[in-house]
Image (cartoon, rainbow, N blue to C red; front, top):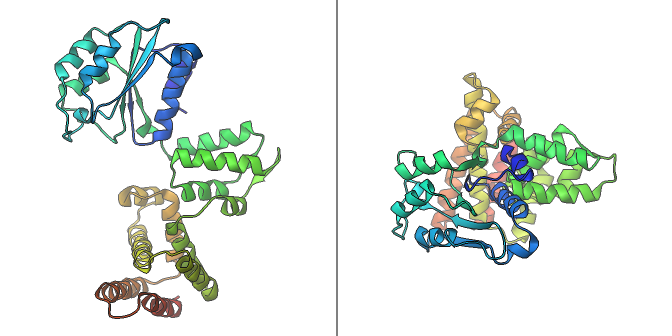
Length: 337
């Protein structure tokens, strides 16, 4: 998954690491691998120190890094949330000079791990450039859609299972592409099937929980397929689960706006991946929105979005009962579809 993992497994460890990215799964896994390949079980208790730089000064972490390990050859110091590497301003004034000095004279007995859970750093800053020059950079932001697909397939191959493409798409869609969620659901799917089995879309739909957003998508899908009673059943189930009508309405707006935008961009000649990049949504969502959009003409979608805006106004001004407003909207929607 991460190219540096092989080196860590072979005990080829650098004295400083910069872990960058917003996916906590890859960052936590990298930290685990470093700990397990640097320290023995006995050494872990006394030779791991963690500092939160949103409330602690970097100088505290540096002071710890310069102290010899206790009953061992190595120690690990983890410094999390270095806002000073970004364009944001934190509450703590950090001694950046001390960090620069440490980087130029790194303690050979310490593995210093800087955890930056951000999409990007401020590359203009001297300290950012210095860390990136001297540290082993593990950029989890570079782990893209294709990498996730390969990882999922490899996981099931090792379990002597197979996952078909539709099931893989659905798994990514239902988990939002978040690796920790994918890992959890893969374990569940692995336990459900015997060796040699094939994971289908139906199995994923049965085992992987759906969020409110996914239920709204399924509701619209039922409308598209002219299954009015099934669509209303989803709606009433959401109300029974105490989902707020205003929240349901907001997600209906979001999904129909996406369908309209996808239809417009595809008409202009954009491919699915280009549309996904333009709208900053998962490619599978674009694919599904495109399929749903085939049912509606442009003017139909414009009318639906107008009706949703009217429903939103009525709901916020208290002109009618919120549930009734949505029921009336669905009545209009079924006629259009």
